[in-house]
Amino acid sequence: MKKVLDGIFKIILILVVSFGYLIPPLKVKAASDLDRTLADVKAELKTMQNKLAANQNSQKKTQAEIDRAEANMGQTKHEIEEAEKEIVLLKDEMNKTNEEIEKLKAENEQLLILYQKLENENVYFSYITGASTITEMIMRMDAINQITDYNEQQLDEMEMLIRNNDKLSKELEKYQVNLDKKIVEYEKMIDDLGDDLSSLIEGVPDLEEQIATLKTSIKTYENMGCKDNDKLSVCVNVKNNTGWLRPVTKGKITSAFGMRFHPTKKVYQMHNGIDIGVSEGTKVYATANGVVGAVVTSGSGLSCGGQKIYLNVTVNGKAYTVIYMHLLQVNVKVGQEVTTDTVIALSGGGKSTMSYDKCTTGAHLHYGVAENVHYNGTASSASKMNKNYINPPGFPSNAAKGAVFYTR
Image 1 (cartoon, helix red, strand yellow):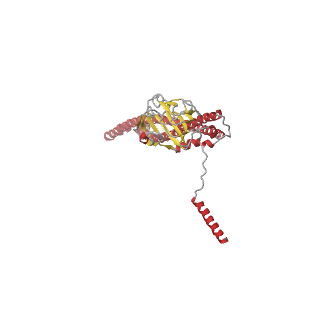
Image 2 (tube, helix red, strand yellow):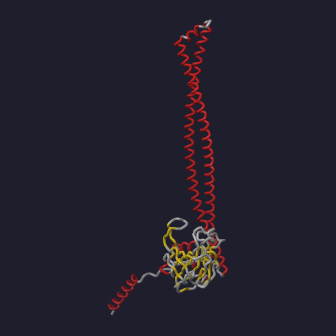
């Protein structure tokens, strides 16, 4: 009997061990953004404000470097102008000296001709011997020699001056070339610093936008009765949907989801949604029942995309954030519950919004969907949203470019 029990025990033990390998371990669900507390959101707001301050400080430092480089370049240009003036003056002096040399050469030539005549016709001898005294004869000889020596000395000095001027002119021209090189270096430095400054400035609207969204979200959560230590899921209740509608009653998809050549940035990059060609002022609806997670209006620090709405919805048990961009008018506020019948905005993207929305070339609605996330303005939810965009569901031909629809 004991052997039978031992055998049964061994069989059970083998089965238990086997099931341990066959049954996968339970997965621990990662905490979502709604599992965070209001205190977490407030802490992130402070972090973003510090980032914005650091960004603005970097802008000031970069601008100061640009100002210094421009000042140095201005001084260098002034030095170039002075060098050019000096070169012109030197060349004028060289021209005058050349004229004097040519004049002296001509005089020397005449003197040589005179000497030749004196030698040939014995005039020189007559002139010397015609002196009444020896002293006068010596004076006449010295006079002729002094004239000859003076002319030769003047000629040597003029030639030396020309050589010095020529050397100085070449040095100045070389100096000017070096100054020109400095100008090129300063211009490149200013361009590089300008690019750095542009990248800093481009990052500002995103930070400002998130800070504005967080401030609004915090105020909304507090109005809902949410305390600092309460989870956001306690304050926000996003009802489940079983399907999707479309954001407008009719339209044509003018740009599909996926990689494309950006019409304003002129680079290939991911298009995280679809563009629907509709005229400005077209009514825009919620595509599922949900809660407004964030809005970006004209007073929130607009960036590429203009006025925006982020709508948090749940479809078939999965969380989604629906994004509407290039809006002419926003009709909802953060925390507001909406239904598929709610006109949440009017579409823009045309002349009425181009003054502040630099990423549009004409009237249309940008519509995007990110899965497994509810956006609330936090950096983590923004990061998750940017990684989880999908081709928006509910459109004909899988939301391909050129697809047309006439119903919601």
